[in-house]
Image (cartoon, rainbow, N blue to C red):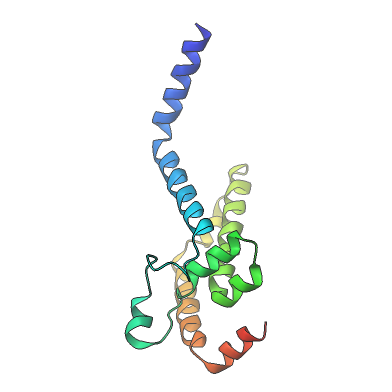
Length: 146
């Protein structure tokens, strides 16, 4: 009797959280792929179309290699590949901590400020400026000296 109750509870939880479980499984699969395969040595990882066509790097260039380096705890190397990606991980971790911290409180105003139009505009400006900065000799010299 108790065993069938547990089975029903597990089925209920799977049914209720199917979307979250699917996202978690996909996220874990991506982590395993990027942990075991180096994007700089594997030909089947996607290349940046902007860099392939123009030779200029976009804000996302180096994210795959940076993610691989982070998974292997090589943070300076990850920062060299894409500094904005490293900072964005810290930003999203801060948002996750803030979300769970505020879930115990009734006020959601601080978290809502991070998803406002003004904040989104600022993030877009940061990404565009990083894209421009990343292609300068000054930035490349700075990154290579780390």
